Image (cartoon, rainbow over all chains, first blue to last red):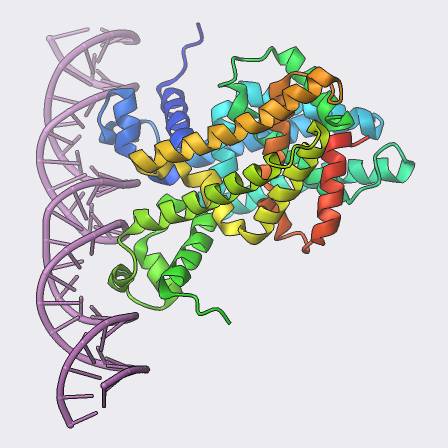
Length: 189
Length: 189
DNA sequence: TTACAAAACTAACAATTGTTAGTTAGATAC
DNA sequence: GTATCTAACTAACAATTGTTAGTTTTGTAA
């Protein structure tokens, strides 16, 4: 067993609560109660509520950025790149569900510098996918629709996998990947 | 000009703030400041913060339920039904962007009875779409993939249209409908 | 002018918020 | 046994929260 540090335990519990009720609606006393200690004791391990948020959001954002970099390093065709991005998203979603929820819903509560850094990462990420889509449209392997519609219909789905992956009886990850690639690339009908 | 009541103005302004920062992070004083009055004055028009939330969430949920009922009343083929659902979603998203954001992100802060009612509406809604998809798979007009994957990849996209419709230079609604139907039904490639 | 209703105000409330200071119990190292 | 470290504790703080009570202003109808 890996001896998760007390700090990591706190962040995990906090992430669970943040996912359920949102960052602003969760108090330090809530987190403490989940840990079965008093609120003041949390400060032996973390500097404050904001630290929990920024550790959560930025570490997940980092995961996605690294995943994207790895995919882009492979020089695949646009279609193959999209497939790889989808699979990467599923891998991250499955292993960091709580953190993704917090990132999606509470990134705007980051403090100034970290907010700036996060938005930059997010914009860069989107720009990567946008470039792939535009390239595919140009070479004729991707349907010639409004690029923003293609981009956001894909990203919307990928960003919210965490929402239903956990409750819907744990679909096998490989089936999930296969079907998700199929539906996003080839559609419903 | 329709003479929007003071109450409606308050709810509109509150919705804007809720969308930006989330229900819990917005105070009555924030809403009042946006209206250029004092917080206590809000209570001449509304019974409390919770009333604003429940009016917002339940009215949007009602819109979707009615839209869905209208679509289902038409007895179309599964594929045509999905097309109609997509277009209905876009219509509601375009006209109630703020309310949809609040519904998506803050429904869990409804109080007990209203929460129950909302969840019931939402589940019923999903069940409608699920039934259409399963019917289509059975008759062979919809791709034979895991129904939950099909369902949630569609719903995820539809639920977050509001997020990017407003910022991305206002794509024409008809183009949006056409391209959205194309990408969701026929895929990217 | 008077009367009335709508909608704003000031002042305050009790509860809750994130956080700090100072202290204490228990384990490990020397 | 003494010192050190970790991680818990109690008690309290200043600020902020949603909300209430009571009062004043403003516009309209008689």
